[in-house]
Length: 299
Ligand SMILES: NC(=O)c1ccc[n+]([C@@H]2O[C@H](COP(=O)([O-])OP(=O)(O)OC[C@H]3O[C@@H](n4cnc5c(N)ncnc54)[C@H](OP(=O)(O)O)[C@@H]3O)[C@@H](O)[C@H]2O)c1
Image 1 (cartoon, rainbow, N blue to C red):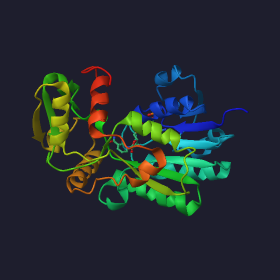
Image 2 (tube, protein in one colour):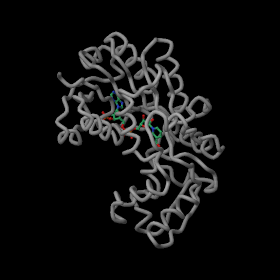
Image 3 (cartoon, rainbow, N blue to C red):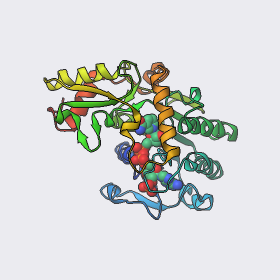
């Protein structure tokens, strides 16, 4: 029997590329939706089928979805992966994708959402995820939404400097608030597994670790693993603003940090454990992360 085709939307992104890889490892035929402007270099090795379309151009999506069993989307506009992208992709782009998926009779769409987005009306890109989920439900689209915490992949890296090498970690805001992290290789595996996982249509599943460490605890953990001290410095968001960050995007990120620091960005991993098995531990994950950065041997 031929392998089922899964369409990956966002496959040229940091997370999406890993999802495509994980799907192939699971024996799926991967079709990647790319824009005419996308840099597809990262997908070359995968030898995935490429189809050109754009979430913001509804008429391009029919061909992309033709013959597809399932869709996994990690795509986002607010991340500004390509210059000029905006949050409009997270609104009308996701709605266009859902409409096309229903029209094509897709068996399941796996959506990359954000932890507790339904509690974050003041954070535009969180709320966009919540509205997209609501739209999918209204439409009767068979979907499952994974709601991950913050990517630990960015922890310790700022302004192009590897803080683990420099011995200095810079973090935004209060370093003693707990919030959930995820490591993207683990999240990518969950997103790929979600294509066939035993879940009810419309489920929203929090994704995190066995505990939500504070930034101070995470720094201490990294320090223990490395066997040397790391200096932790808390800074204001304004100090970390990239010079080219538009005002609207800056306000969105400021609201996000306010939400993180409110203590409400903590996952309930009960369902994650049932659906995907053991939940990653903070210590072993941090060890894998530091190994991937070349600081310690792989566990
Ligand atoms: N960062 C976090 O801590 C965090 C936490 C929770 C959830 N998330 C979610 O995780 C995902 C992040 O994935 P990532 O890191 O892979 O993002 P990314 O590196 O910024 O990539 C974004 C992807 O979306 C694609 N895209 C953007 N607009 C598009 C359009 N109009 N049509 C088709 N494709 C379009 C981009 O394609 P091009 O190559 O053409 O630009 C790219 O492949 C997002 O959904 C985000 O909300 C992130």
